[in-house]
Length: 151
Image 1 (tube, helix red, strand yellow):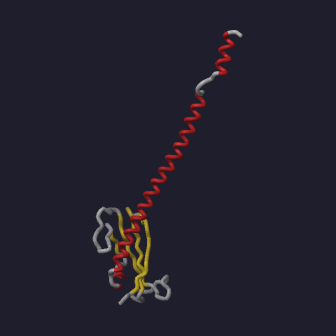
Image 2 (cartoon, helix red, strand yellow):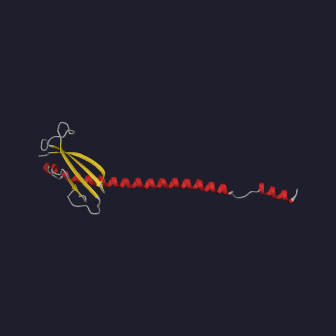
Image 3 (spheres, rainbow, N blue to C red):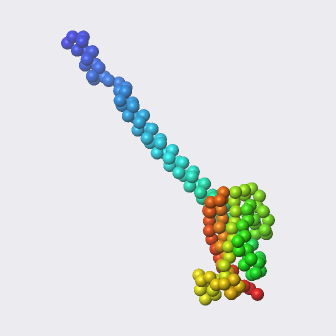
């Protein structure tokens, strides 16, 4: 064998390292994988934030619920069309640190035989209270309950 053939055989048999194409393909695959992981992390963080907003909304609706438990029937019915912004607690006091949040209350008299049926104002001893909790003008939670005259 000539020295030239020895060099060619050594290059073919003893290749070490990666070619440029192999390195680029590896970088491409790792980049795609990293992008997918970052997308999943971003989605998780966003969902966690939405859960916190919903929890806050439930808390604010519960404050109105507690407030209606301590009111007489006529005062509950009179809440119709009331909006609290900033929101209030069950004692009617403004809750600090809740800028951008609001609680909108609507009431309607309901039939005692079928609470899904609205009746005229004062025509029943049953009122449906609906609360919409909003953050920065976007409704985050709507809930409601029935209040019966106790007197």
